[in-house]
Length: 279
Image (tube, one colour):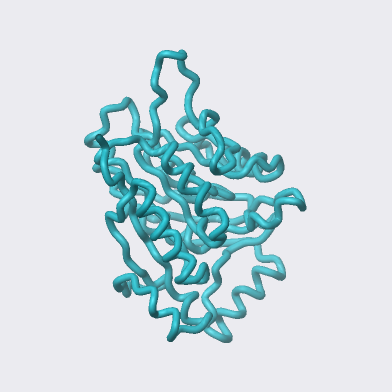
């Protein structure tokens, strides 16, 4: 992977903090900048170019005007989504994948480009500017054959995310859901979990992959883990990972007492949810 950006002053500041003070950046771009992600594989090179979205001033609290480092980590580790195994056992024509809180759409668009046999829906809050940029990013990367953008507010009717069917047909839900850095506001945990329940296909193989930088706060993340475990899901896998290294370790909320902001920025949490029961 080789990221590249047309740097503006905010991007330069983030880069300088890491160089001078070893402060790991949690965002990789700012409003209006162009971000380029290059994925090198054994047989080919994939280049994805993204415009960083802006939002209406009333929606600045969404923090959607950046590409988060956790989303880059996700695409750097696509194999950990085990998408090939989903494709192998899928009973549908295509595996269906949903990205919630997509922002610029980096993970969803890269997945769509790498897996033309997966139907990808990238979604975010129904802000006109945000959705225009997300849709344009799909277009400029020529991913529209199997990737679409949908405006969706967590907790609302997910019908907009699903294809139109006759009244007597059951809409196909999603086999895989992904989200990067969507858990920082504990006030939104309830409606986020509600969206997971409404959109994840109730099957033993369906999975939710959530990646969150520890800048979110360990207690905030533990609060989500407690809530989601009481909402019909169980944790299939959970692990702390070093953002720019190979170290991995068990999740431990008590580390909050020993680490500072600088240390927290070096780590993220990757965890996987599945249905507790599919009956």
